[in-house]
Length: 464
Image (cartoon, rainbow, N blue to C red; front, side, top):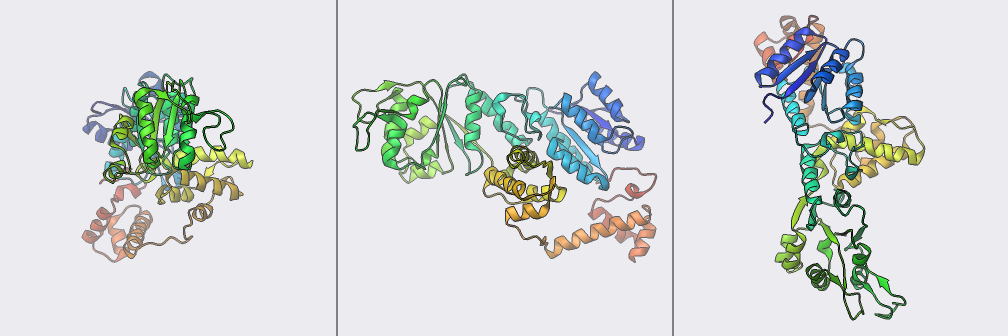
């Protein structure tokens, strides 16, 4: 589907430009080349590419400045940065601000191609709304996406489905673990629907005692039960003309499920104690973290109600299944929380951001927000340090590696230092390491290292 896609490659090293161009053209891409940020911006103005691949170090304006310019004028255009070791912190910070991705030299060519393919999926013609515009700035050009930040293809596909579903009046069942953002998605569907100007009313069915839930949903008349001193309209009536969101629908008692089914069938609500029903015009969204198929098998959930609710089903992924969304989400939450504490916080230190991106997230997006808020509350610096993230995550401050991981990390670092020391001369590096050249080449191949990357004349892309 991406054959013939236009890729712009930016680097001031002509050899690297030619090499990358050859590899991308071999994959069927149409490639433009630029040697500076200014030249790249001219290319973009004349013939906008689908993806920009740029080195960070450029003459004049660097790759980060190029990204900022592109992001301000074409926020849906993915930018991939190629970085040397010294610019890694800048690149990580840029990722939190919206860069689609970055690769550290020497990088795996196949990894670059995979990253380009991912970017092309987001920038594909006809993709939903401004999917790629959620690359981390936390701002969406479409109001319906407010508060939903993502760059992953999985979330892009989900939001595309949500946008299509929103146009209809079909009931939607939103599935997902606690903390994945089910109510946030429900509100987005409401904002994108023809009912957007009507009310959005939400209730957690598992948080209200059974004896009160019926009254909350359907209302009651004065004297209907002990304590009913006044007539009260229910949430169905409050949501009339708009959307009613029933969170944790799987926790609704069976007796109330029967009454809810009747309302959905008849589009009429009878308040507790009333003698006649009243018409309501409500679009129903519901959500659950429970396995409703298992609940039905156990007789805890009515099958006929299930099929009324599950006209369309949307499933929110766990945060661990959309890790590329963690940096932009964290940056978005920092923007929200920093003002609350009156602190000039600009983001996370690179190692702190890496800890967030690789952590386990049993509490999903809600847990990430809590970690960001705690870190913001305690930090005294503009960049939140790793120690505060570890504290919020309740992680040990010392990194614990397996023996195999530690050995691989040492071996790769040792080989890189040797090649730097010998200017990429394999014979000299092997002699210092007291290994024969054949064995040394095998080690380089194991870690995808190419001697040319370390030569001063630099043929700068590592071969796979």
